[in-house]
Length: 232
Image 1: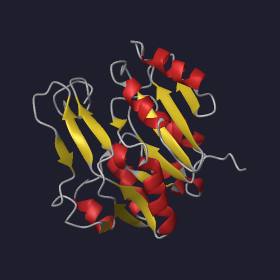
Image 2: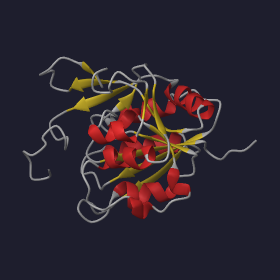
Image 3: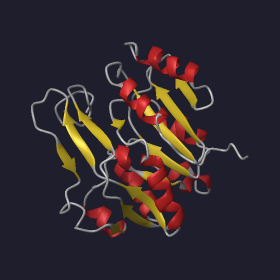
Image 4: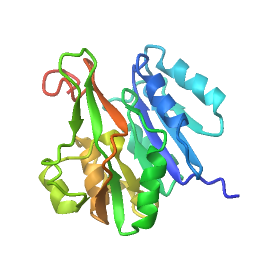
């Protein structure tokens, strides 16, 4: 039996000790009829994040391949482009940052089934629950029907108008087994939107109407405090 992963899960994390177990549990609970791998990059966290990742890596050595930085790479190298993306073995790639998590054990299977039966699609995504960690706002669902133009099949032109794909909902038919990673510019924000666009350039975008993950908004998140912090 071929043990090559069909899906590579890519996770970047930094000082996510409070959240990282939710993310890792969401990965290892996936029920699939195919092998997958979990690629994690810890950017020299100063809390206990790396210790938690090592715990999971020791428990699931056949699933995890991890990079532990001893010096923070912010502003020097890109954790995905420079470290994790070159490690990808899967035909498909799923993304999830260390402070977000998946809630459906069949998420990967549903998305892969769609992609395998729709070879002209290069992106598959689904709605997510947006949760404010301090409960300052009620939970909501993203994207709204309006923000995805009331469509379940979309194209590059739609995605150029706005980003309606939350990072931890996406599955790509990975184009970088053939194409160079240099297509991804350095220092571009938001990098996930650009990555969506690069994949929508070579195929259509499919939407599955199942809420299968949580996007967590919290103090310390780069996008939660957009335009307000030094990091931003």
